[in-house]
Image (cartoon, rainbow, N blue to C red; front, side, top):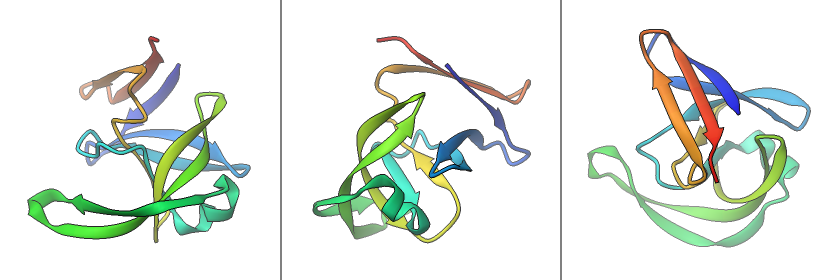
Amino acid sequence: MIAGTVTDNRVPVIMLLVAGQAWPGVIDTGFNGDVELPDTLRSAVYPRFIGRISSVLAGGKRGEEDLYLVEFPFDGQIVRAEGTFVPGREILIGTQLLGQYRLEIHFPDRTVLLERVA
């Protein structure tokens, strides 16, 4: 089980330990991939290039990105996930990574709970 919080801006966040450092992981239910990682974590997750992908972002904006298979620490284990790299300091957690989890976001109490169900 992973517990998190809802920020003042109503963003559900969990903290993740990657490369010996705590990183904010934003739960993004509008992102149907696995993960989007800060460039600074590239060497820590042993990326293997898969290919180029086309993405459709909010508002219909399209873009192309390099996609990698990464070894990502999540819920006490290392999972193989598909990820992209971007500038910044946040990790985006997409719905594909959460396929085995129940997600509960309680906005009034400002709590987030991820519980593995499979």
